Length: 452
RNA sequence: CAGGAUGUAGCUCAGUCGGUUAGAGCGCUGGUUUGUGGUGCCGGAGGUCGUGGGUUCGAGCCCCAUCUUCCUGCCCA
Image (cartoon, rainbow, N blue to C red):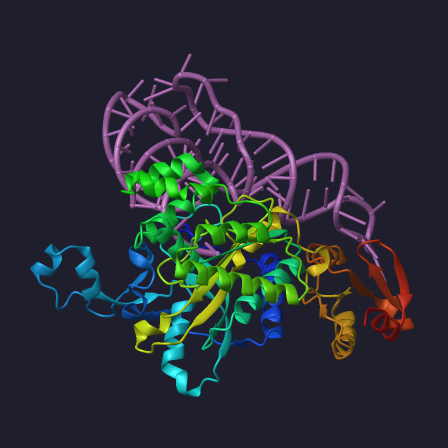
């Protein structure tokens, strides 16, 4: 038999990791609930018709497709095989693993809209799957923690997303940079340089500015067919700088002839004002007009969060999508949401050593014994300990005390209660602190009140 | 999905020009004045050298394929 192995890009999580992951999950969850979001869950798999076409062509390729059950090749003929894999796929696979939580959520909203209080605020913490090639901070199975609001255009939602990001990152101790842009600004930008309709190409190139530099960006755009005139009009974009307020002023001049662009600026400024009203400092929040994410569905605000001091992709991202439910037959429902990437947040915290030490949930008290008589004597004490709310266990085998202490040591149990014939006679049990090595003789009641 | 690197004990890694029986540290396990773990001392187990082919008298080492992990790109959390 071959050695067992994991599917590439997937991982097991042992107790140590789960404790830390739960710490992150709980932090995010508590913040979501504080802002009035309610939990839902959706299935791991969806119909491919729900998933396909929502994430662009790249996304369709990265979807994990599930082979139909039973004789999936029954109805195939030679022509199907010759037509290529894309057409073949739709004939042998009709389900897929979900790629994110937003699209299944949109499906959920459409299917349940008459029962949902609008605006509907939900959060969802589940794994998603992408058939990507794994590398640092990129997995094929990973968890997203999403919070979305649908059924309102209010920019208060955008502002609250900013506040939630701020709160979560602060609680986790992560130094971060939250970048905000607006799709309408990108649209305005393409109009302003006379390349209306080319905004996706433009945005994808500009997005790489801080990575490859101005020259390479212009090079790429020229290759994609942008005129020299358009590129020269783009020039002021690269010199936008200063405080967020100063950036707004420069941007207003740049987009003065684009109605859409000006609308984008107005929206952004409104978000800023709301955030300011909550007294949150602007220190970690930055207007970045080169930011481009989720171009296939975001229509308004775009968010991205990066951790400072760690070389890893964005740890959180989101934005507003005006028409996601439109593809499911219900138009006019606007939504805005945020997605926290737990796996990347974990990697960041690990690298920066941000996990609290005393986080481990473990046994507080282990009863050790010298034999069957002592074992039996300990049973009611064990019951008592648990009734008092002390996490306790009794070493289940009759074995040497050395082995029992070693078990406590490995499991990082701070206190052991040693029971021998002497202890049974006097009722004074030996309590040993495994960290200091100190021992004292106490009655069970004293021990439990000390630990409780 | 494109390009590059990688794989030897549970972990981190040595292993010469292709040459006999593949090593170390850590970990694991047993013992060490039998009622005491984490620090000492002594012993022990553990490897089809990622996998499958090929070249050779002979392969951990050379060639091909395949898989894993890591890096870059694209895209993203």
